[in-house]
Length: 419
Image (tube, rainbow, N blue to C red; front, side):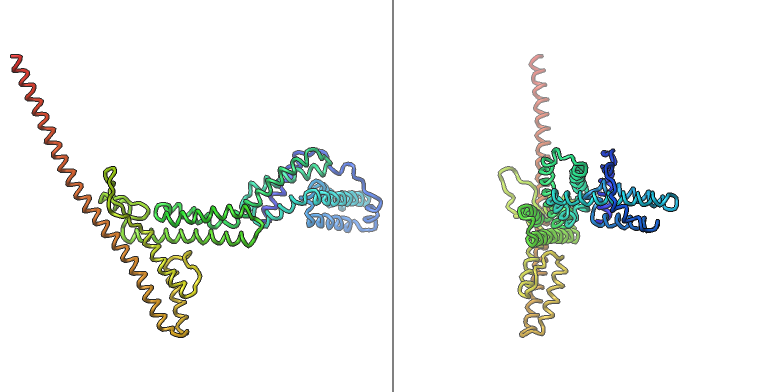
């Protein structure tokens, strides 16, 4: 964030250097008090005192709240440092007094800016709290540039159109605050969902992936409506991340089973079937006729396995583990079950949990076996269709040959009649 602020300040300084040719300190004259403050100091202390005042102004955020005054005071300090040992004492004192007078006026401008742009500065703080310079750098820089432009008008006492521009800036900054809060709360889930999409989750695990997207969109809408409710924002962000992890691990599990069973688009195509959503589906039937075979998806099998594990986890009073890979869910259940040994009837409970884990594993094995059986049925039906297609092709060839013979005979008859 520190480097982001430096970049913003560079943008602000460039803006004013390019657009403002007349120094704001032109009419500023140091008072007798300013001169007296430095008259009793040594040359070195004159420069050191001015340097301290400039640094204090920097810490007070004058580079943003009154950038022109800070820049010109810094320029006076630079000149004083260069003049040390080269210019007379009177020149050093005069320069330091001028620098102090500029900083004093800058502090007065800062107070005006803080009053007139209180809400904008509050939004700026919120944007930085929600890491907008990193998450939304372009939008943040534009907002800061617009705010700096209005501050520049206050510095130069150019009030025209400030209120109209303030209204538009306030709305854009509020929108950006909401966007930054959404991005902060939902950034992780957005990245996970994008990764799942790249890994074909919309095809391999469409039900779970669609649910993750729904949770994400719902969270985004609810955050926009109640962005200042920190507890709600945190909870919605956690729910979206959980749903994204859930879809991710289901998709990875489906992909793993596809690899293990060698159920891929190529292998299914070789037997005339179609791979769709991690499942096996029969060839298309003639219009108006159903296949009569229900499609089985790997996602459905994995979700059934997950439901069995979740019921065991709930019995052990564990948290919802569905955002973890199934292997880690099993590990967590085994650890919790081991801890339950010391409880009353612990041994019986352990045996029960082991049986239920075994049943969960048997469930997926059964589902996989069903998929293999359906794949075999598809291959057999495809062979039957291929044989029928060949028979039809042979008959069509025979009909074509007979048709050709008939045409030949007709031509011969016509020739004979002419004779």
